[in-house]
Image 1 (cartoon, helix red, strand yellow):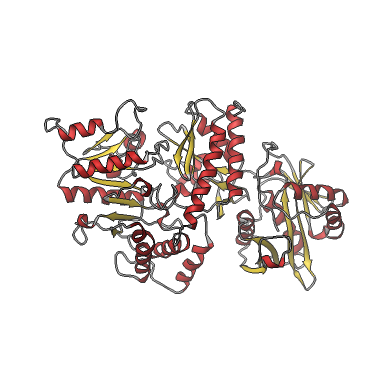
Image 2 (cartoon, rainbow, N blue to C red):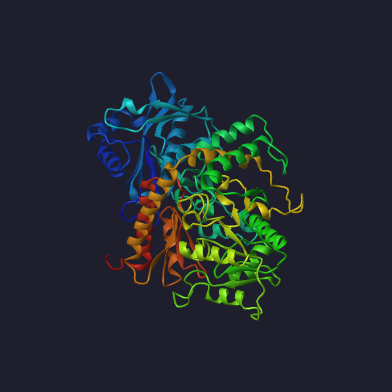
Length: 622
């Protein structure tokens, strides 16, 4: 079974100056055994077995040394019944040298060295949850434009020692030379040993010369990404990154989830309709039925489903327009540090000053009111709002709507208390104000329930959904409307890309796969508890640090606003994608896929622990 990266406590060098690839010899046997043992995920054999491999299978195996230090190995053999097929038995990288693309480089070098001897196919076995190895071999196949087959090979019942089932990955045939074969740095061969200096960063010149400077995420994560699987993203130089970002919340079910990918590919291969505006399609019908049966009816929710444009801000714009049309009032109230989108209407109810400045015009017909605990408990909730709504001489017009996030994903991960949300709902009902709940980022299971407001005991008048509603990262948005508010005339609010049938397909399958019963929800809640426990252990070591958020939308606020960004940068260097949040980027924000394994979650927390210590020191022991 190939390797799955894990993060230990051993410090790794910042960069290697030279990497050598060669066949193993008997002196390597002990190093191979130790690397397999220390990987904590490989099936470790006796040291005797590794000595035999180093002696008898040296021609079909490879060892990488990093500045003369054993850094990793790939062990394989040519199948006797099919000599053109190289079976890869184990891949391992020393923990000090992980995150540098070494596994992919060893694999490429080994296969290239055997291509002259007729090797045209590669096989390996991987357990279904081993996303890192799946990403490694998938990227290998894609780089060589080779087909890849996945079939069951060894069932769990075949293992007397309690082993997970193994899938057979069969890649090929592939050509003798891969299209991307270019070291990008000096390489020489001496006596059968290939040496090369470390490759430079992937070329990014076209991004710098042609793409607008408005781009942002790539400035923090400069690698060029090519592949992804589960909770792992792989760059074109073979580096693997554990994803605690999940497409800003658009990938709740992970990258390229096979449960969703296969039905999507089947739909495309069958020549089914892709673009349809708001026409009737079977894909939309099936999604609506699943959404009604699995989401709305079990929660006793009565909504009309509107398909606005395919993004979160489209959903918010539709909600704001509809609230104004239904009430005949213009003003909308939103909250301090809120974020609702980047188009003009959404920006008008957003608090972030930098984003608001980008509008270029005054953002009117909205006002900001304090979010939960904005005054640190010094002022009663809604005291000002209740007073001015009751006082006809206040000079404050009754608003058409109040829009709120249950967790402010971009505003610093402030999470409203459930009783505060319920009180807000009651106030809106008392004064005939439409309550819009923006669940674009916190919805679709992110806080532990499908909707973030479920546990608060109220029903919003309008709900905005996007990001992970498609399940696969495909653009899609919904605006859920109280039936009596469904007042747009036909075509009064429309858009070209409302009928995204590919998103309807994956959205339906996501609902059927993960929300048909309570099991997934319970698993998410358990993972959320693990995440909060791990973050709390880190925060407790640093004075003034505090855990914020809810569910798998949780992070750490630091008193020095610069700390979070530095920690996120250090985490990236150690193979973890994590971003910041808050008006001063003072919060380290974690948002992993809901499908992340406990092992991956623990590994990511280890990286955050080490990254925090590298920036702030070891702190005070808890």
